View 1 (cartoon, rainbow, N blue to C red):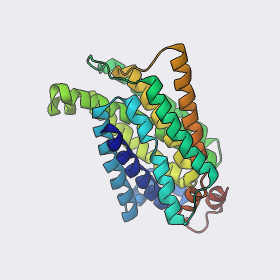
View 2: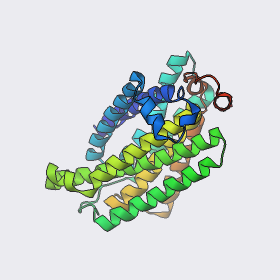
View 3: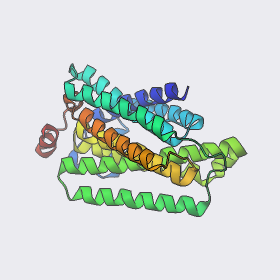
View 4: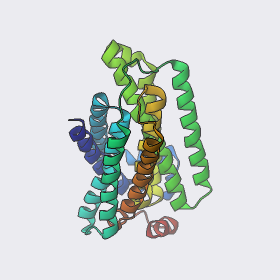
Length: 300
């Protein structure tokens, strides 16, 4: 059942990303890394449709995280790029190429081998939700996010988009791990306890900042540059935090670790192959006139 729910969540996330990027790309370049960008986007019905679809996907991903470990659910959620590819290709009237098909096959194979070899399991004990541990995890994650944003500001629009998208993916990974942490509290102590627990605030904060950074990445460059880093960073960070904070386990044998890291690397390569889709590149609304730099970045 977790596989059905996880794939359904990935589908909704992929559709939501496509809708958000189509609107964000049409915003003024002067709004980049400003709260004004979010305010402008909030006036566009299509953007709200994208956010609503993504939220529905997040709800399903939360349900999946209640059924299984982060290490199981995160790879399933990473298939959202496949659905984004399909939707973008439909919108652009584009037929998938060999590289995209190869990426899809590689992603599916890497997921299957990772799950078979890693044998991810939940810890039977209480998740490690002590406040100091959560604070350290959040601070370390925010430090990584800040580094990505600072590096991005030294690059051109395409480079900035990639780094901002990576930062958004890191936050989405934190959000996924925090969601499962909150659900553990809900299952063992009830709804009120979950609302008073620190995990729920991590979920809200990570989601809010992640959405803001993702919109800026979508604005800075087209979808084939801005979506793959999100899809690649989210499962890696989510799995790492699930193991570090929630007691999830994977195979720790030398051979098992080698295969698991190889699978994660293969997933990243697959995401890049799929992300170079001309369909994703074409799935962009034209930006405002007078922004030659943005148009050049999208055409790069």
